[in-house]
Image (cartoon, rainbow, N blue to C red):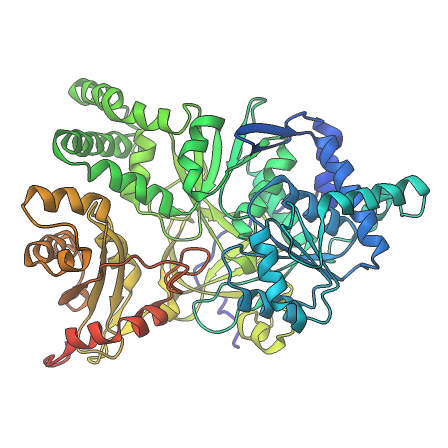
Length: 617
């Protein structure tokens, strides 16, 4: 790999202040000592929200570490974790990392065969699971995993053989502490060094087997320190965060460390299906999300039928004017101020109430956020600040801040991190948060980290004169038509998906005569529209074939694509009557489309679009 040219566009380097909290255990224990909150963590159990104190978390982590010590878990060993977000997830994480071992988080949506691959590749010696369902997955593959000595379930394993209960394991640890046979939890935590491996996170790649990303304690702690230094989270005594992205996703995990470091109460959502309800029950003030949540809110508002939808779309238009004016330093006045008050009363105040009434800000990452959707939340008084990063970068590289943001960008580089634009427009990054490498894959590591320490992200972007980074697309996503034209699909997909009648969009066209598009309708909004047109709605596949629906979706997708070059525009669309899902193998656990899997599944429909296609454009 060649080294980046010195003359490439480059962000200024903000020095990272020194910090003593340079490992996960030091972050953990310092917060226990500083805050001592009774409600460090919250979770819903038996229909009621319950709290766990800082002291309780440390006591359980210490007991668990003592039990693991008795099992012979040593520094550098791997312990896997297969669970939804809940207090036990953090307790296991703190226990394992305080011992100098590394945890291996797994997405609870993974099937048994993928779980087996990761457990085998990582050499995990123990596995913690949440429910009997997850325990059953482990039991299905356990015979082929000779290094996996123990499986522990948070809940009663429900008769799954060979699975221990966490309650029993904690009691075992407490007995070892009481008898003096376990090493001091705090003394052992103090021995962990910043360059020790903290976690092994397997990337949910869109092709091939996942790779294990090796992140050290300082990789993670430097990210927390940089966010703290930028004051990206202005903490209040009554702050409460709702945690709903999977903790096995590096974004939520690092941010939860940040919450813990700042003394913020962390409430774990019951599930993604219950997130909206949990907002109303918990009344959080801050949260992080991927754009999918914001997309759904926007589509629900603007796609509502009848007068309700018209009022919402009018309010969004008013909000856009207000937000753009404020970005230019102008507060709304005159008639715009009147309209804004009406829009707030009729629409925006209801959105805030649905979010619990206390939300101060969101942070968004994991995928591009539409500037139009961001404007909606800014207009509603719940700003969404977008950032950028990857699992390999722990994850944050850039952020927008309340006093320094530009909609449509992913912000400026965080302290300690340099960003450079390399060959072909690729975004390169260097800093203390860059991974050690890929587990058991030195060649793959050398492919992405060059001799000067620059990590090659695989993303295409540009740095503006204000130092803010904008991401255009993934290099691997770029389509090259048969006529040799390069087409970046993501910006086109983002615009097309703005329609309230569209749920998902995938561009097709690599080595084809012209670009085309697969469109998944948002049936929640499409069904009422179709019924009003007298179109039968019982059969979704038949609905997708109706010429009136096709005409609507062509207007709502291709019709929105102003400002793109002629050769970039899709010439045809195919309507897909089923959502791309994780279970169908068409989305990664982080909700990214597996383009190759989509193209393979809908190969016949794609070939039909290109049958008899003319000359390349």
